[in-house]
Image (tube, one colour):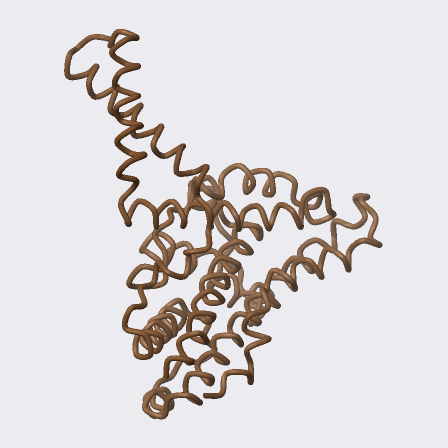
Length: 299
């Protein structure tokens, strides 16, 4: 089967675009006179990242259509448009999962996270379970446990988890939480102490401290995102993508009111959250596409 027409592009992280922006801005000074470039540079980077992801998804569809004529027939009858809507991205996610399962019936979506190391996070998770169990016992008895009882309880629970381990669902959840941390780390590594972080100091600091708090690891299940992430994508990525791509701000005067600005959900309306959501999506598709390539060898 052919699988090399677009593979290099599909497997290239859109995170590279952000790195290119930082490198391009090295010659810019850090004075207030550069502030006028902020929105232009960030908006351009955002559009390049959204555009690259949209093109990737189209390439993935063509690759699947090249290798499966039945899918080609169905794909040509579909209308994914620019692959910018969440619904389009989710449909392609489902198509890709179906294509892999067709070649490898042992495939499950959590397998795309199999390489993520959660040894440290696993211990933290067990510690949380133990602390919760101790609190429940104290609540049940309506008094504090003695140190000897706590020690005995902690020892017993640790031995239990060392012997049994965590269930599959807990392991997958921890791996997804780790992926969220990884995405956050990638963005910070690239942007920290650069002109991008100086231009929007408040937004950047808020992003650094709250990215993982705002988003749950409920993604890549039977669909791409859960309702929370779907809503966030549509609000801060898709809507802003349309405003930028179609230059809506040049003739529309529907600016957010002060009441809108103070709402909690408006806190994520900044480019760093947008970049991270796009990178998270991209990482999921890269991992899934790698599994698709491997599955082709089973045909």
